[in-house]
Image (cartoon, rainbow, N blue to C red; front, side):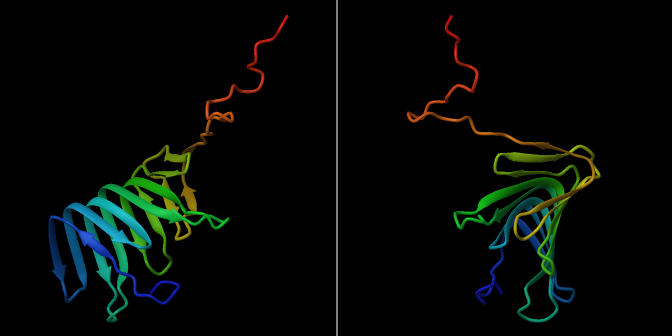
Length: 165
């Protein structure tokens, strides 16, 4: 259930699916897309583990192959959330802590900033608030929007004015 007590619905789309009701494990393959209020995922393969207790929902999800994860990051000022987009070869979501763990040369873009693993062994953790923690070597690219003047045109950077002699 979400913070308002509403049930959470996870929708999984795939071309092929198999479900082991005894073990409560579902395996989805080919064009896998997951829509959940906590995250969206696309991948080649998805294995989901459902809680044993009825009505407890998703316990864990493992996405593999060409993984893309989108997670909202709340705006501290109360505006619309920004998106964190993660790309990796594998992602594991665990409902108990709400973390998405990205492995296999992960990269995460948050707004204009991009965090890129510089080792295939680097692990990136995207928590339920959209905060990113990186374990292992990485590169961070911080971009800045070009400033615009009142007419919406890019304004020259300071010191770029031609000097009058």
